[in-house]
Image 1 (cartoon, rainbow, N blue to C red):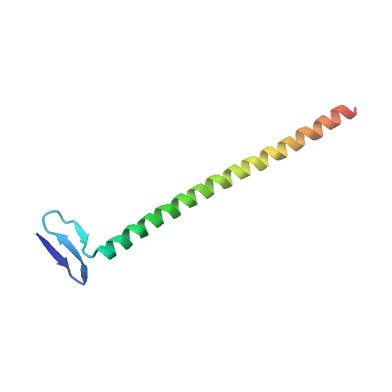
Image 2 (spheres, rainbow, N blue to C red; image 1 turned 120 degrees about the vertical axis):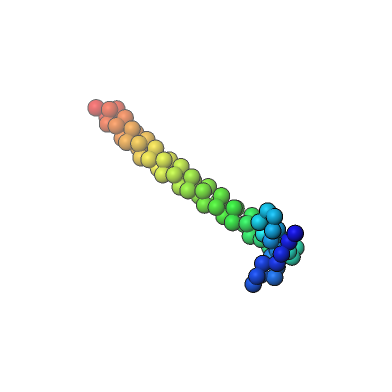
Amino acid sequence: MKRRVEGHPELTKDIDSGVIDIHESNDRARYRIAKQHSRMVQDSHAEISELKEELQELSGLKEEMNEIKDLLKKLLSN
């Protein structure tokens, strides 16, 4: 048996299980889209963080390579 949630006419609650259901299909579709968008944004933030870490690592490797090149030049000039 389902009951409407007070103050929220678009919501119903299953009395036996306690599950709250969005009653109107448009609201349900908007909720699903918003949830999917939120996941995509979180995934994008995680990917951006990983890319920033990789960029820092590459910058460090570039500096080390420049140091090695300088040392080799000094060795060859002697």
